[in-house]
Image 1 (cartoon, rainbow, N blue to C red):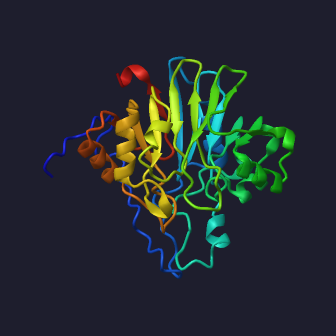
Image 2 (cartoon, rainbow, N blue to C red; image 1 turned 180 degrees about the vertical axis):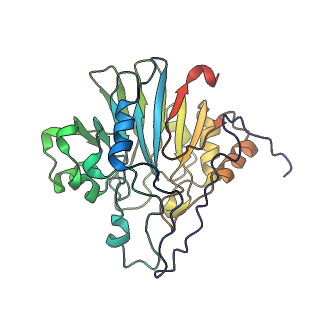
Length: 308
């Protein structure tokens, strides 16, 4: 294609070839074919994450599909963002004309999840999943963090108010290990939740990870989001008013993170996207950021010196 240039990338082009279109969302009789096989048991995978040692100049990131991430710095604190660890959307929204089944395995069962901070960007079921939250071992979690509608879900699922931390866009939380969490602006995608946020995590070593959460596009959106980012994980699916690959590339061009990570394109059989379309859109937009598609079951260890 004229004008297309290969993106800066620290993976081989064929390393992340997953087929996200293998399931027909209107076929309710065929079994769901998983995009990736279950490679590790739930408890073993969680233990591997908890035991993983992170160097002082790095952070480690595990991708759980959709908008789900687990992040870890050298202090050992684990941050979980929008972890959807069930298939509840398939039954909750069974009246829809299409299937909302997950086509990724549940990487860690809720009962086995062992994170210090359970963060949700908003209250939609694939981000603040009631089934996941009800099944968690809350004694392992220091705080449940989210905007107002997320806290309502926490309360409905039996989480004690004292264990919850309410955040508004622009509000920063200073944590005991020196990490800061900041809620950022996100443009709501429908009227069921007008309290969408993004999440900015700054680690004690200065590395800055930003997740947009679900957000619709607006001309002023980029001006309202954080700068000086190492990593921006951005939704690209385009469905349900989320950013399209082209919209996401426009935002990345404005924010100029060192690395752009696509997300929210792989979980639901009815709402998939193509990371390579985002990769191409970055090039066509002239965005300077490196592109990184995360693999399942593997930590991505990020160091700033690898992405000058």
